[in-house]
Image (cartoon, rainbow, N blue to C red; front, side):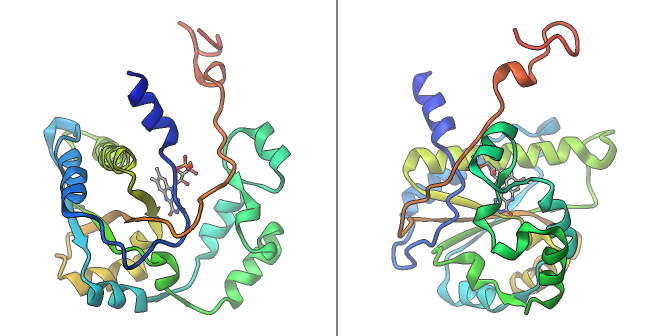
Length: 237
Ligand SMILES: Cc1cc2nc3c(=O)[nH]c(=O)nc-3n(C[C@H](O)[C@H](O)[C@H](O)COP(=O)(O)O)c2cc1C
């Protein structure tokens, strides 16, 4: 029990460069995929396929894809940012804006920066990762009677967490790259890997071993903030 909570608490987004020369051992990769295999999914749909990319040429080809950060992302991302440690500790949700370029602190400057920004190659997202897992799902299907396939998406979230916790337990760093699901990048990646038209990228994760420490402020709400005892609004237990 204590081991599980330790792994859950220590799991984190390792947004740092990884050592491109240090491969993920096959055995560790298999364990991460075994954790994927046992994911709970709505109606046991197992609504995912995973493309394991560890071929240097393919990684380089992905790295050469260029993309521009979307204004929509920046605008909505802004709402989740705090601009000081004190603000973040008080809010208990979101992330610290200090992780981003100084211009992003102001929403107008942020939008302007996005408009002016040159498209960036994805090497800057992959940052040395020797292995990427690209998770795709069939967009034509949904969990039975699930409006907006919310149950299907929850299932994909369970998959993400299963793999992430297993990676954590093995000492393998893990970082989600949602940008690979954004339309221009997604279509390039699908072309590169021969992914059928009906499939969509749910998420991509980079695995690896960091070249430096991944230290940043992680906050969470208290249990009393999100728990409602027997009646909505009756906070705590
Ligand atoms: C569905 C989902 C999408 C995410 N997308 C990204 C992403 O594109 N880039 C990123 O750096 N982190 C991404 N994250 C990681 C979250 O930002 C992170 O889990 C959250 O800030 C809490 O930090 P922690 O993982 O270190 O505990 C994503 C997480 C989830 C669950």
